[in-house]
Length: 402
Image 1 (cartoon, helix red, strand yellow):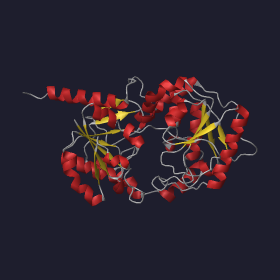
Image 2 (tube, rainbow, N blue to C red; image 1 turned 90 degrees about the horizontal axis):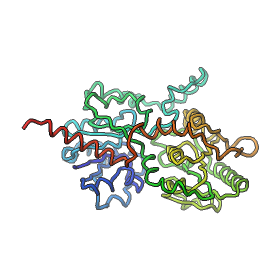
Image 3 (tube, helix red, strand yellow; image 1 turned 90 degrees about the vertical axis):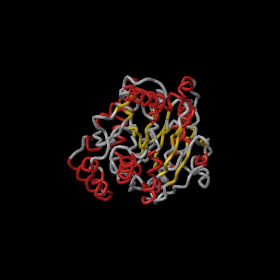
Image 4 (cartoon, rainbow, N blue to C red; image 1 turned 60 degrees about the vertical axis):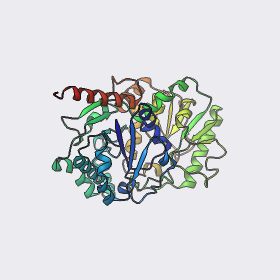
């Protein structure tokens, strides 16, 4: 079977595992990648990684929106188009890709995102004053065009997805115009749960250490794409983190190691974490090998939940102000996991009491809601997807009259 993956950010080593390339190519399937980063995010650094020449994949780079119209042959030659561009709302870029799939007669699928507490801020309990403030902040980044594009599929009668993968009960609350009566819903799990399955053997062997899951907040390269309006002062931020880590190390007698964000570049920022060990590309292993996790809001926290690791959720006023809904997301993460939100810039030292406590019941509910659709098998995600697609294809062939 020929899989065509459409991506909106250049491939990384993390993506190679996340998209199941190793499994699918090992199962004898053909893999092509259509890189439309310049269509979705023309203002970002979209330079290709060294994976662009990987022997298991054929990669096609789309220079701009006009060039996308010339990709019909690549799309029509695929047995299934995997839209890694689509999340919750249809964008202008999605619309162009959907038109391309329609004209090429190619079936497509997408994976519903691994959601998180507070992802839909409209359902969050807020006071009238908070609603007024939030509305004023939203106006600064509101895009009428984006709102229009999200409603176009209903008007334009674009084709519904052939397959959609669900990663938790929260996906049921998404009203997606790309899901129709003919769409086959595949119960699966999130990418982070898939990561857990690959490294859960290490979860029974924690070392006497804690790990900080870095978000590269003062310098994150995708801040523009996600419309981050706030700013985190790097000098103050890293100084507060160092103070927290020192307090944890002195109180508990264990070191804090750092798991750098996949897109972080600390080559010119040496010493921001002190002399602590800084690791890149080892997040899964470090969570599995640590007694507890320190971090901000991140889907990677789900990996800690799956491994039953205690979580120390930290923030500061600047961090909460990065986006207008961050304060709700942080609050709901804390509520749903049964943990306190600890402030780096509060009066006095950060309280670290009870940092290794977990609520197993709430952790289990979190997994069902955001990470793994109840009843789905514990197989790898792309094994589940391939099995569902091949089964549906075989069933369709048997129904074709001779």
